[in-house]
Each structure stands twice: as structure tokens, then as C-alpha cells.
Amino acid sequence: MTWPARSMTDSLALLTAPGAPFEMTEIEALGRRVRSYVRMPADLRGVFDASRAFGDRDLLVFEDERLSFEAHWRAANAFGRALADRFAVGKGDRVAVAMRNYPEWSICAWGALAIGAVLVPLNAWESSETLALLLDDCGAKVAVVDGERLLQVQKAGSVAAALVVSRAEATAGTVTLESLIGPAAHYATLPDTPLTDPALAPDDLATIFYTSGTTGRPKGAAGTHRNILTNYVNTGFRAARAAARRGGPIPAGPSSALRRLLLPMPFFHVTGFHSTLMPALANGATIHCMYKWDVAKALDIIARERINGLNLVPTLAWQLSDALVTGGHDVSSIDLVGYGGAAAAPELAQRMRDAFPNAHAGQGYGATETSSLVAANSHEDMMAHPGSVGTVVPCCDLRIVDADGDDAPIGAPGELWVRGPNIVTGYWNMPEATAESFADGWYRTGDIARIDEEGFITILDRLKDMLIRGGENIYCVEIEDCLASHADVAEAAVFGVPERVLGEVVGAAIFLRDGATADAQALADHVRARLAAHKVPVVIDFHDQPLPRNAAGKLLKREIRAAVLARVKEREG
Image (cartoon, rainbow, N blue to C red; front, side, top):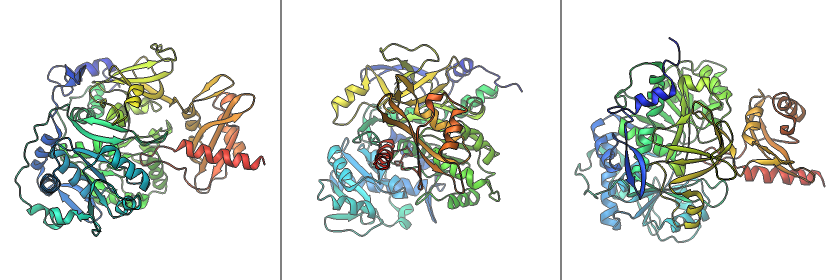
């Protein structure tokens, strides 16, 4: 069969035609005209209640613990009832969750959503001061924490939110989750009486997800039920488009076959919740969670549980592929390896195909502000365009905007703007930041990108990460990808280093693979052989530990750059 059997334009027309899975209609949402999917649930409460249909099938597996869909529904109902009766939480009130990916995370999140409360997932690895600041910022009535987060919150002093503790003993002024809903062993026998209907509307606020804060204080992206459910439909687009491109039949909806997913990403990230937990609840998939990332344990889970899909950040994908070089691991059940959340070198797609011979690679692009997916690349398209994040999902419009605010020509770089029903309402309690990033329905991503004639998007850099050497714009991601293609390089971060004459020159922080011998000259020569001379790193700083990243897998560029500049200054005396 010749591939592609259908063009991208014809495939999109087929997938969005009347009666097709991605059929759309124009609606008004929050005062804006947008395209919305015709076949989409109205609110998250409906998805939650419908999940009972999967009965005794496992929803969440954590180490030796298994939580079925039915037990999850009953436990979340019990928690929602406790929120309303014990803490007077009602529609629109904020309920924060700060813990590891324990099964209780999902129970508490869906219990809050089911009564119309606004779920506020907090980064479990934030400092005590930041956790307290965010609890105050969102005005949470209740915060559910595990033992580690309880210590962090208490270290910061008193907070206004009532504290519910999971997997730890209660302390003064707190109450345990178990005292509210009973022990995990009894979840399946809890009352099956549905909660009161909160009369939700699609544009009611559902979540506040705080951005990762790599460039400053975290901002709370205020998302609606429509935002999240739009993303749910978008999560099915990659496979459907691949089928259309091959000329095969288009699936009428999500497969009823049991999918087993391994998720090392945190639920407090939109990839973990919007694009994994929420679709799993809707589609009857099983999510296997890990206490912390461990390559050997991940490979053991894959073989033992016959995992079908992996949802990773690029760093973890590289680590798995490194471990599989030695062989001896059964990964035959894997049919899709998805990654996103951070820049990925083009070589990673082929690396995944080699490591997982029965799997297709897939990459997603999006942001907290876009409720996860904006674009997707996978299957044969991924192999044909490995440096691209794919094409835009059907419901979104894109602009590539140049420095003058005009649309850039095809193939020319500019800032990527996005518009659609998945764009959040703005930043909680931050009107100035909202006005700066959102205008007339458009979200300004801060990413520099280009789009080719077929619609494939390539992310070149972050607008604020781009460096300028002697008047020449240099995109750090391009050089990072080049360095990552060297066999000895495990991680690379590229940034500007101040220079008196040129303004900035290229600097790089490098973490080498085990046993690697490459030095600065070898890496500079590697880049020089592939890129223009002005893009060759002048400062190359080697690190003996993995480069610091946030919980979403993004490099902490400011922290890395500051450490490198400090060492350079020290060496210069």
C-alpha cells in the first residue's frame, strides 16, 4: 500500500464530516465564537457517573493495590458527600489536592468535581512557601495532602484551608481521609447513592492548574468543563488521523478493548490529568502508577502487566531506550509510546521504533493554558516528520505572528498563537498577566514555531529563550537537538552567555551518558559539522548529575544558566 493513501486535507475533511467522530459546529462560549465537537460530553460529572459501566475493571494500579471503576466511583461519591456535609463545599468552591499519584488523588479529585467544586491540583514538589501561597491564592476551602505535603504545608505556618490527610496520621487541626470515607479495602461496599446534581454548564469553571513556573511565579490557568472535554476528544485524534492517512476505516469512537497504560507523569500536570486520567475514566483504560520513576521497575511492570501504552516525557523515553539496548526485556505488548511536555530531539522517534518494535511513536504539543493538546504527531507521519510536533487538532486555529504582529509567511518563524474551545479563561487572580497572554480568544504561547505547506508545526524555541549573537537570532532547541544526536550526550541545555562584543554567544550544559568520553572539543566539532559556525557552543559546561527539571520534565533553564555563569565567573577569577 502506498502511504499516505489520503492527503492531510482529505483526511481532515473525512474525520470532521457530518456523522464523523470529529464533526464540529460553531458555538458561542464565554462570549467567543468557536468550533466545538458535536459528540462530546457536556460536563465532567457525566463522565464520572458513566464510568460505573466498567464495573470491576481496574482503573488504577499502584504497586500491589488495585482500584476498580466501581470502587473508585463509590469512594469519590463518599468524599464528595463529605466535602458538602462536613466542610460546606459547594459549586464553585475550590478543593486542592497535593500528593503523589496515589489512587486517593483521583478519588478526591473526582469527588470534588462531581459536586461542582473547582479542582486545584498542586505541584507535589513545590516548596512549603509556594504551597502555602497557592492555597491562599486559589482560596481553597479544603486541601487534601499526603504525609509529605502535610509536613510542607505545616512548615509554612497556618493555612485557611481545612486539611484532609491521606496515608498519614492526623495531627492537630487535621482529619484523615480514611475517617471520612473508610479504608480502601471497603471502598467497593460504600453506598451507591449518587450525589446531588450540581447543575453544571459546559463553561463553568472546573479546574485551576498552576503553570510550572519555569519563568517566574506559577500562574493559575482557570479551565472549564468544555476546555477539558474538548481535550478528551482531541486525545483520540492521532490514531484516527493515522487510520485516515492509511486509507483504512475510521473508528466510530474509542475502542472498548482494555488499554493498560503506564504513567510516570504526575496527575497535577495537564498531561497526567487531562490527557491520561480523564480519558482513561471515560474509555475504561487502566493506569499503572509508580511511587517514583525507576527504569528497572518500569520494564518489570510493562512485562508483567502487558502494558499497551506509555505516556512519557522525552527524558524518560531516552532512559527506557538506553536500558533496552542490552535486550532481555519483554516489551512486545507496547503498541504506542507517547511523549511530550518538553522538547524532543528528532532522533527520538526512530529510537522508540527500534526499542519498541511493535509500537508507533507519538508526540503531543500543548500547554496548561490550552488544556493539553494543540497538535499531535504519530504513526507514519511521525517517522516522516520526526522533528515536528505534528498538525493542529481540528477544533483549533493557529497563527504564526512575526515581530510586527502580522502573520508570517509559510515556513517563516514567528510566535505561535492558538484559538479554540480548549483555551482556558485566563489566569486566576492575575488580570494583567491574562491581558498579556490572551487577546480576542487567542493564546500567545511564547513559542517560536514555523508551519510548512502541509500543516506540520516545528517548535524552534521559547521566545524568551532565544539568544541573539551579533544581531543573529539563534534558536536554542536546534542546538540542543544537535547535541542530543551525539552518542555520548544524555542531556543538553543551551542558553545565551553574555559577551562584550557580540552581546551573547552560545553556552551549553551537558550531562553525558555512562561511560562516555566526549570532551568540549568533540561536541563543538559535532555541532560545527552540522550547523552554521555562529551556532557552535563557545562555553560547554559538563555536569556530573542529570540536569534539573520541573515535574513536567522541562529543563530549568534559568537555574542551569545561573549555575554555569557562576562557574565561568569563578574560573575567570
